[in-house]
Length: 424
Image (tube, rainbow, N blue to C red; front, side, top):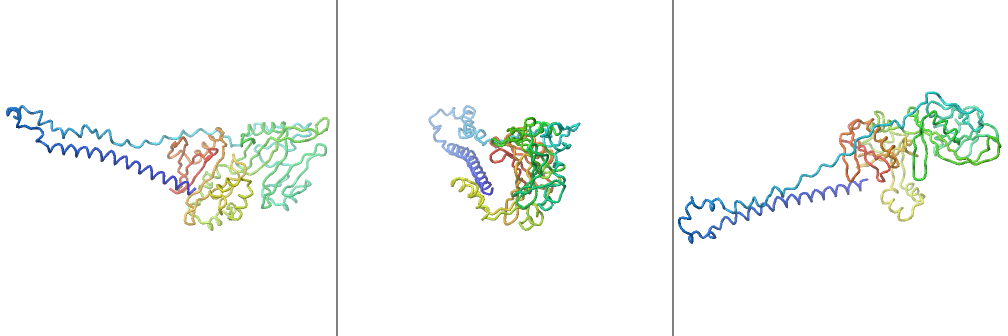
């Protein structure tokens, strides 16, 4: 980031130098022309008045010669006004902020949908008003370790590696549900497979999902902002017994999972990250203020992660040059409504203290998500104090809480919004 800002400063200084040269050119040349004209005034002998008739030298008869004074008229020919540099054009404003559509809200059904009791593969849990951990997990929740999960609820559980299982029903219609542990040994995800009928039942209860497209991957999401839980359905084919013949068959269904996420209000709201005292803090102060969010990566670990990324040598070298192999200190939150993994807050440092910080909100170039994210940012921060359109890319400036400035612009790949927070 520092390199990018340095290049921007060099460019700005170069542009300023060019403007000064233009100004000097337009100011100096007319002056030289005027001085040249003055020199011409000092040569009266060239008019040779002695060779003309005396009467013609009388003032009344030679008004033209007195007023002519050609040198005095010369500046007008230089037209200095036309040579003045034009004022620098004001950068065009960015497009207006779109209206929010409420895509990331919970859309409760007037009447809760009910599963088909005769279908052996129907959901085994009632669809709640908004997404939440299915009741079949019997109280197991996010953040539990294995010991706590083992003793919660009456259902029999099995464990393997970084996951635990609860089986519902009996063979051949036995359904596997799972919960997953992260590196810290805490539960972070619940999952099960569902068919199209179950997917439609969720739509009936929670409304049309938000479609997320990432390359060839696609997912559908529903949100519960109050509980900070989102349900995600990813297309998936799997084998199961036919409901009538009981023979195995492959069906096109979905992998449904429930995870915690970070609503935009937790980032940009009155109590969100942007409202916290982050600017000016040291690493030690970050550890004290954000013990659950701080993520420190040593240079050795960063190099190992870069080596394990599977990049070719040239790309790996470029990534290393951009700091991918350097030690880092970030703040890590659950994914935002449109992201998959984490929302990472990246600080920029100056003399051991945070100078500014930034994070990105992905929209994968989908206009509905792009517009909704921008609309909700404005809904949380208020009307932009400034906006501009530079090289076709919009930038919006907002007055954030506690005297910070929030700038929103396209990410480097233009597949998300980059949010930068700095002191005024």
